[in-house]
Length: 272
Image (cartoon, rainbow, N blue to C red; front, side):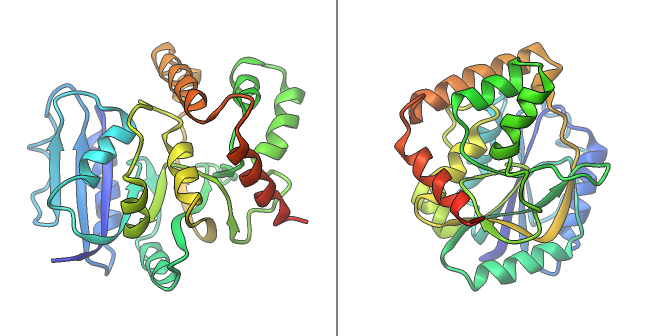
């Protein structure tokens, strides 16, 4: 059977309540949906608590493969069979009918490889889920220069804050909390680059798809994401963030990244 959408959710010591919530949302859709729960936890404590459904597959890795690596387990599963794939965080809220809206839109647009909806914080504020490709200075200032007016000035352009976030735009960096991807695009780029344990895997995947397809911010539908900013609170997560970003810039270029310049310039031209 070919499903309309396959969905992968990576777990790590996740709360059962969070998992049940997002499963209830996804399974309420009228589409035929296949769900993979990929567990990076040290032990399979959730296995016997997950509801047994023929459309739901629980995969215990036995080790922490990271965010992108965990999703790749689902993407590479021999049981996966779908037209589109949704990379999804467990800590999101949305109405099931948005999946149908996105599916209908993507089914008519072969030029679109990746789509992300408008993402709101829990308080209703905008999460700035569509961005330019970062330079090293963007990440250094955001993470290590605690001077607000400098950060605000840098983020204004990087996060497209001059934009009202109320129309569809084609951008090279979309949030990894909800990535709706065409099967053709996934086949083209071969999923996530799992050398990035956490954080830049969504930047890397978006820009690789953006090279061949449109990667759209799609504010016709909205989700709520409880963005934890874990690396600002946890030294281990900060280590993962820093080391993964070093690997990202080693791959794409620190100062000289011609593709970054081209993609960002093309993105900004949409607002002229």
